Image (cartoon, rainbow, N blue to C red):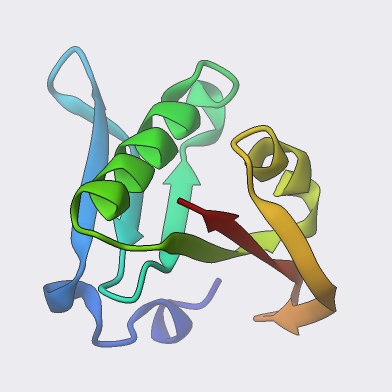
Length: 110
């Protein structure tokens, strides 16, 4: 994704999680907006399918729960729908394009 589409000015108001290997190699990131929206979730390709994304997502869901949110929402790339469904998210609406990538809106009730 082009860098200009990644910078939305919301980072200072978000809660961020970073995943490190051996405490020093950053391999994953995600953020939680004040409205319960989870976004910017990414794990470096060589580190995928090792539970890193699940731990980051579970951490943000727990933070949302602890801060009194009634649910979480996200816009999932269509290839990752199954990942989010395994964590209890439910797809809503149709597929839409975001930065040339097909996505679908998903929600999780807490």
